[in-house]
Length: 464
Image (cartoon, rainbow, N blue to C red; front, side, top):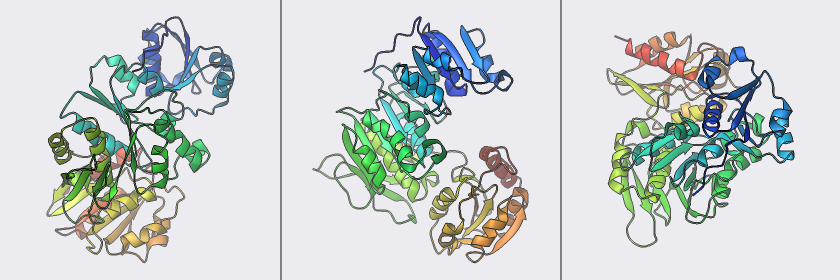
């Protein structure tokens, strides 16, 4: 159990005024600190953030970072969007000033409430939300971190909880110090945010901090098929559990499911060597696909290791509605599923979505395109063959998609999402699925992947 830091009268500088930074500044001000907030953006670009701090004894130093505000502080707290290696932060560390992530500050105020932390490259949000939904069937739970509500906001709310479930990104973890997760889970580690961390090794090292701070009595959960994830969990001083596919194993969750399962899947959980495994059924469409079975196994372990009864776990798996824009069924029309996977803004994510559908069925009408990220589309070719009856392209990168995937499935250029939805309605027959999984960013035609997914839903719902 950590005790809250004594901040009264201390000089605290909060760097970065996104939502997490604002919450951290408010918490420090509540604790009586002398708070300075600094952001590279000018005041004109920070209206909502400054409004949230109005009336508080907070000094604002905007339009850049004065090194003296950091080196002269007793504590520096950084928002996730602020690189931990920023030169003014390095100068602060050299001057002996502690530099904490916002989640580190919040964790000091959680007291005896156990923290369940989920990290990884893909699947964090789904796993965090599913674990939170399962815990909520048995006890009071707060869900947040990188998913939704910053942890400092939870502390400020005063809401009582028996467990906190948090999605934690590499940006949040690279500047933790003593944050301790009672259960820490890593889903996978693939190249991401290399512009920030410099290399895959640097990216993995940031996430590994979550396990390095664990103590005996804690639990480390990792994906069996990911060597980096398993190595990260190996740094924990807690008990190690794995999840994956195959026969039952001690201290593990396993699924014997096909790839992807043609129907309901099963998960076996062994906590100890003796006895029969617990068995759970995964049948909901929100958890379709091999990747979601992995997410379900990770969430199941998080819950069972902290004592959530098996019947509550099963009810949570059965009732989970999924998250918006992640393989979300937004409409069924004439026997056709319309599925919003707008969150698939890169090729790897689109590959995961396609793999969730059985090969050889040729039942997917795929909508793909937008602003590309420079990655080749050719790796999708094998997944299109046998699954995709038509590929409808849209947006800036449509020519590149058509050039690289033209032989894998019949392709039509539609230009806009509206035109692609209309054409998909003509092509799809009962038993088909119309899947928006763009493999591209949205910024050529939409402000965000959320806006693109919402537009897809409205267009699908508008079909007669």
